[in-house]
Length: 295
Image (cartoon, rainbow, N blue to C red; front, side, top):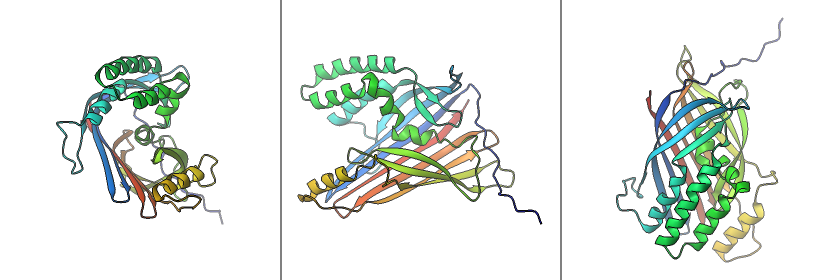
């Protein structure tokens, strides 16, 4: 009797046509500290244009953001932004035109035009300094982020880019085991970066493998040396006005991509993850995108 062989799904190929694709995306954060609720949400309208490969053989894309729009806590457009939102929109302009480097598996690597972004930041910085006199801390934070030794790390771990560039093309899906990727959730708890292990698996497919769903889940990597257990306890201790106590972190992470494997395109994606600590703190991040037009 022959030994049964493991069954594999077909390899998903990435569409490499040098065309421009139009997307909408939404990024939302809801933070609860005791009875205080902080809400932030923004919608992006952008295009992505495949430009070929780099000298190293990676993929190169041009991302162009046409419009940003804040939403209120009822998901209604904000037409009269607050001072903080106006500042956010001004700073975000440094990301209007980015050259993105992506692996052949469709994993985000970094940006190819950091010098242009740094130059734009200096221009935005001058405008902010002339318009507002109380932004030294904010400007100082961005000065640090835009330094040559920091800028790539900031983009590489950006929650939206690590979600949008899904890293499952040309991967071998085993029906008995999910794809696994180590990932950092930037500012997952307060301003602390949290390492997780993400898993991806095909959960729905039609007979001809023309339309599929890939679901994602993740677990906290408590044993990872980057896991900031002590800083989490210090942060929560500050909220409770107590020192030296330990606090359990409850974590949920669920996402889905709708994919057309035969033409190598992701039609949409949705991801939501939450951190809960006792009844004093929670943070939920929701990311979505949709392909609106494929030219």
